[in-house]
Amino acid sequence: MSSHRREIVWIHGLHGFFRGPEDFRALAGALEAAFIQPPSDPDSLNWSLNRDVDLDPSVRLRFVSWDLRSWLSSPDCKSLDDLVNRFLLVFHESHPSKSPRSSRSEHLERHIALGEGLGARVLMQILNKESHALDDAHAKKGKRRRSTDPLWDRVILLSGHPGFSNEEEREKRRALEERWAERILREPLEKVREDWFKQPPFSTSPRLLEQLNSEARDWRGQMSPQRLAEVAQTFLLGRQIDMRPGLAEWRALEESLRVLWVAGERDRKFVSLLHELQDLQVMGEFWMCPDSGHAVFLDAPADLAEKIRSFLI
Image (cartoon, rainbow, N blue to C red; front, top):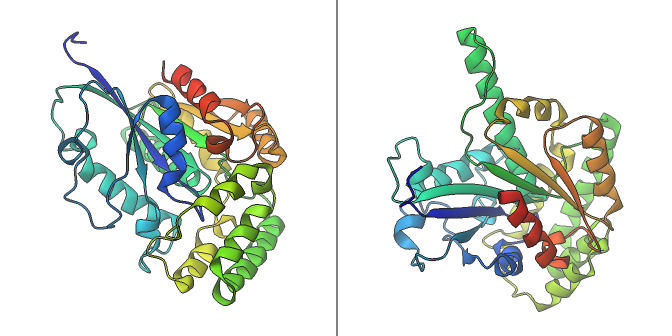
């Protein structure tokens, strides 16, 4: 490794449902990272992090908070796979150093992915695809499965749900999401959104509601109420397959990837889920953030930042 190449760490943040890219500003501040919001235009394929972002070259940490609403607003985005593919297309085009066409960079660059809620599930789906593709490639060559370079060398999953393993639970959740979709269409959106965050597990983080009251009214981005209702019925847990079988395949990436699963200590639902994944021996480190509810990035940004710094070593 050349001593003349500086290390730059890009942290790519993906927010949750009913949320936006501003969610991670406090966390970026606690990390002392530059906070970058890419254009909200879903077709911004000519935008480059290296070319179009004016940053002090001495800044080592750079937090890129992507706007999932950019792609969710399109009726052509009909599944989690569609959302994953659209994000990856723009991700590669916006950062040539991670593109298959990339050449040597003047910096030693690392890419870290961080997702919360829906954003975490997007990252889980990407890792499932990467590990499955690696398995298939080595199976065709008749070789023992071995690691390769994934898109990121660290992935941080905040309140990441792998889906329901029980079909009855999934059906109940789907019916619940359909009721929320109906409310989105017939009631004031601000009221529906407030009620959404008053329910568990979101209610374990009072700061979520506090932030709702101080936010600008553009939180739904370019989505109409009709499209927002469709998103609620398409991208939430009721329509998600159980990802647990795919999580076991992440071992194919373990030589070059580390995963951190995070839940707030007061969020009993996700703490229980993390214990379940530990029992299943899913790859990764598991951390319950003290004195925090569901929204760890809001409840304890300093503690989360400290954990992330140690995780990057």
